[in-house]
Image (cartoon, rainbow, N blue to C red):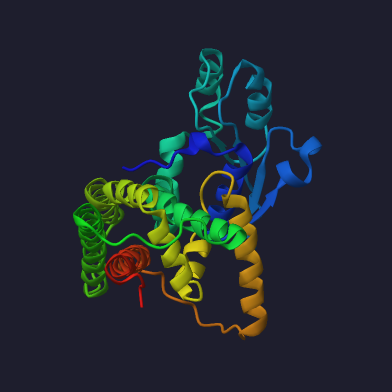
Amino acid sequence: MFQIPWHLYSEEEIQEVLTVLFKEKGYEVYNIHKIDRRGEKGVDLECSRQGEAEKLLISVKKNPRQKDVNQLNDFADKPVKTKIYVYTGEPSTGFKKVMEKVKDKISFWDSRKLTFETFAVDARFYLFMIIENYFEKDVWAITFSFCKFYMDFNEQGRRFGKPVKADRKMANLLWQIKDRSASLHKSLITLQTLFERMKPFKTDQDTEMYIAQAFLKSLSFLQMDSLKPLRELYLEFLRKYPANFEQFCIESKGRSNWKYFIEMKPQLLPGQIIKSFEEGKEMTQTMRELIPQTETKQEKERLTETLGDISRILASEAYWLEDTVDDLFKIGLTGKCR
């Protein structure tokens, strides 16, 4: 199973993820760590369901050590039946001994268990956590280099003069970029079509896990075969032919591709995830105010629908990268991309 790199996330970020997951399970979640840090006494999250007297308590510690033993014992003594202790790093030897003593009172979740529970509760969220951490980094590296060039151009004006006319070397480089970007785009469109046209069928969790992991494996192949080489090829073009890319900035300045490039940013990476949660809450609240809510309960999205939608999003990213090389071809041949 592709693992979420929890070691890169802070304890506060992991708490926010757990808050989202348990809310999806139907709990009201009270973040004691954030609201009442002095009074938490080993408890970070307190979860309750309407109509149920019993609460569920969660404690999060990335790398438990001997100094955290007293806190663990306090947590174990809480008069609550269900207690979950989440840790993502390797506990110290002394801490492990205490874990063994209190294992009948506490359910321990390591990083693998946390990843599995994330998938079980919200497969879409799990998939985006994996995709953003592993597969989209090269896309962002390309688009960041585009945007930096564009911003520098807007601030400093033209610096590199007229575009260079395409010779054999430039044409060869552009053909390689076209080949990689077209291959990536078509492959993702194929995945999108495959999952969107797949007829509904009942699956158990093991089958869904197998399908999701196969999907992620296919993305890893695309990353190695198309996306990583595409990143190097685009960066090579920017180094060798800055005047041509500058002309692209001039010719395409008013088009939507720049809005797309600038807005296409990671949301679930360490350092970004809490802000994206907050923005999501604000957007949800705005939608509730604008659109009357009905009592009709929506059916849970099927995994195939999720994979089709994710493929569509990734295919859109690949489309803009392919569209850019088409314009660079025209600039090399004619001096303009229109």
